[in-house]
Structures are given as structure tokens and as C-alpha cells.
Length: 422
Image 1 (tube, rainbow, N blue to C red):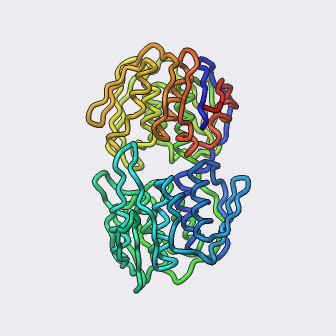
Image 2 (cartoon, rainbow, N blue to C red; image 1 turned 120 degrees about the vertical axis):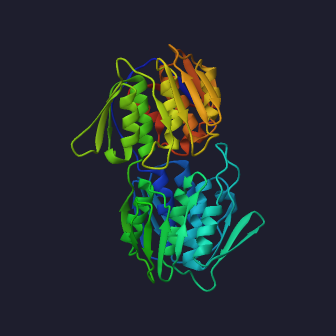
Image 3 (cartoon, rainbow, N blue to C red; image 1 turned 180 degrees about the vertical axis):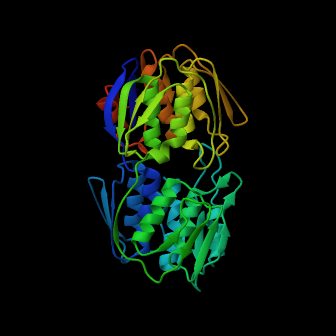
């Protein structure tokens, strides 16, 4: 088990390239099961979550090769049961349900366990697949879905208590590509990762329209074929490094980004007094820390609102921003595990009913801290960049789930960090 030592106080500068999106890669890799032909997916980040997905595909019987960010998948003979010992390690493995059900007419996938950031139920996934004609049973901790009479298009509302479900939208969209007739998803998630999956499916011969809007229409086809696809840039990784630049930067340039995907993050950084400038084509941006940063308030919302996956990082920025800022998470109100660790570093934060109130302090001091989830661990790394002394961040496996070689990228920007064995 690794830990990260961050020696604070060294400004960062220079340029790095943003990796492909982890959250887009996972359902796209799962969707390769919809065809028996070769599928090639490029710019897949080398993170533990994508490694687990590759292992799941292999466990299902697919032939998978991975090299230099490219994954080739041939799923000509697959089983219908996802291996539990791998599925249990990654909640996003539930996105296997849609493609397995559509391809085999049956699937067995383990229910995901509890999550430190709060309840993330799969009932919307199951409800959507049942609307297409599947029968669902819960047995031995598994979801068993079967469709002996095939899947049939219908209209499905996927709005949950906290808004649309991204993976639920993905699951239903994938299953509907091989359903008979036309499926309409209302209250669909609008995230760029959903759009990327739709474009991948269309490259395979699917007929998906409306992705990126609350209404997605899928006209079922008899068969899908192989394709080659480039995954979109990871907007959360880009946002994380944008905050790093606002905290400790002297001019940081991020290459291979998508300006439109980062609009809500850019807006908050500018409101907080920092400079964000994109090039003419919108695929690179440069961030300068503001001379006089000011507090700001954030309320997380489904896309195109401010992403829940970026609230912990912004909390780290506000910890040393003069004045009082507020961060409210409407998606996962319990997602504030990072705050207690930031307080160990000297932050002044109070959390009450899904809102963190942050009073900026002059400086943070290094302390041993523990990562509790993927984005919380990123927030601790960011805070450590400017803290006095050496911060020891334990349970680094959390950050390795979703950030490709974060220590190497920080080192490329001049940060003084080192990965060591715990």
C-alpha cells in the first residue's frame, strides 16, 4: 500500500496533458460487450477502476489487450455472470447489466456495497431495465436479470430523488440499442460522459439521438459492429489541476481539455479571483493564481451545473481563501469526509446538513491525513501543496482509482512530492 508525501511550499508551473475520462471509459468498455466484433478504445486512463473493468471483461470471456492507453476487446463468446471478486471492488461495475442483458438475454451482477460518500442505489437501473421487459430477482447478493422474450422499446423516466442517474442512463441506453422498437429516456443525465457513450454506440451502428439533453431516443437495431473510439478528456482531472494552479500555481497550462465541459468550474475560479484563459480552439487552458482571491459559494447540481466530483477540491482552495465560503452538495449531502482531515491541517470548516462553511485561514500546516474516497484524497493533495511542512497522505489507493499518475504530473509541474511504501 502506497502513501504520498507532499512537501509544501513549492510553486507549480509548466504544462501537462490531461488523461482520458475515467467516468466515460468505464461504460464504453462495458458497451464493447454489445458486439462480437473487435472494438478499439483509445485514451483509456491507466487507473485502477479501468484496470478492474478490463479484468471483469476478461472474466466474462472477452479477449482483451491493453497497451499505451489503448484497449482492444473481442467479446465473441461471453458468459452472463460477472465475477464477484472483481465486481465488488468497483461500484461502476453495475454498468455491465445493460450490455450483458441485451447481448445474452440474462445477466448476473453483484449488488454494489455501501459507499463512504452516501447511498448510491441501483433501483433506477433495475427499474429502467424492467421497463424494457426484463425480469429482476435479488438472490445471494446478486441482481439476476432475464429477458426470455427479448427487450422492447418504451418510454422510461430516470429521474431519482437527487436528479438524473448517469450510470442508470448509460445502462438503459446500452440495453435499448438492441431492443425491438424505439426507447425514449426522459429525465436523462446530460453529462459529457453520457454523450461520449452515445457517440461510441453510434459508431457501432446504434441509432441514438438527443444525448446531452434530458430526452434521449434510441431506435433499436438487430446487431452492432466493431469500431474505433477516442475517449473524451477527463473534466474532473482537468478541474482538479485547475484548482491546484489556483492554489499554488505560477502559470499552469493544461493540454487536451474541453472548454465547454469545464464552464462551471472555470466560472467559480474566476468568481474567486483567479485567471482562467482558454486558447482559441478551447482544447488548452492556462490558469494563474489571483493576487487577491475572494470567497465564493457553490451548490452542486447535475450537469451543466457545478459537479459534485469537484466540491472537495474547491473546499481545499477555500480553506486558505480570505473570507467565508460555502459549499453545498445536493447530490451527495454526506460527501464531506475530507473536511475533518483538512481541519487536522488547520482549516476552519463547519459541516451541517450537506453544507460546509469554510472560513479562510492564513496558512495550513502539514499533518498525517487519511484519504476516504477518490475526490477527498485529491483535496488533501491540493491542500498539502501550500501547507507548511510535509503532509503524509495515507490510503493512496483511493486516488489511484481515478487519477492517472497524479504524482508524476505534479512532479512535472515542479511540485515536491514522492510516492513511498506505507
